[in-house]
Length: 242
Image (cartoon, rainbow, N blue to C red):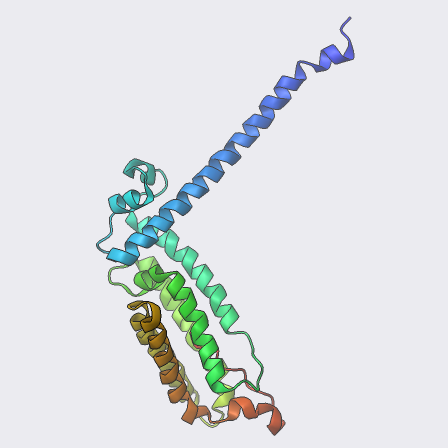
């Protein structure tokens, strides 16, 4: 009569085999995620250097060090790559917006608040230059353009909300114009910033801060720092500037 140990022994290889069967899909999935990340990094480099229109799947595969066939295992075409990359960057940018839109000390001088906001968003775009190339280049996929338009609309609304306490005597339409001008000035300056490097880039960043500050100063006056002294609720700083 077989002992209990003898009965259990055949089950051990079966158990190990079941564990291997479970681990294999996980490993394949992990390898697939790494390959996708590799392809997206390569696409970011290609889109940044050549633009979306001139880029090709062959160039992306070459930049990633893989064959075109390997690329097509994960993405059917260039548009699919751009959409995936754009969505990931959009999520990261939204997180950066959330950080920049956080309240600051009401006593913060306007110059300091503007500088901090510009630095946050310049940092994101300098780390991800492909974001600008995808969101503002010609012939980008319609889905990316729609997402960018939605994000832009949300930003205008957020900036309006933060400007309203600083412009209490202005009608809503005027506040909207100020918000849109702030965003437009930043986007124009960003293009110049990204076109330069090193000390020259730093100089353009400072020029951008100066333009935004000089535009807002006569509009908001000393309201930002004067909030606590006046006994009225302190407005949030203009670090919402995207």
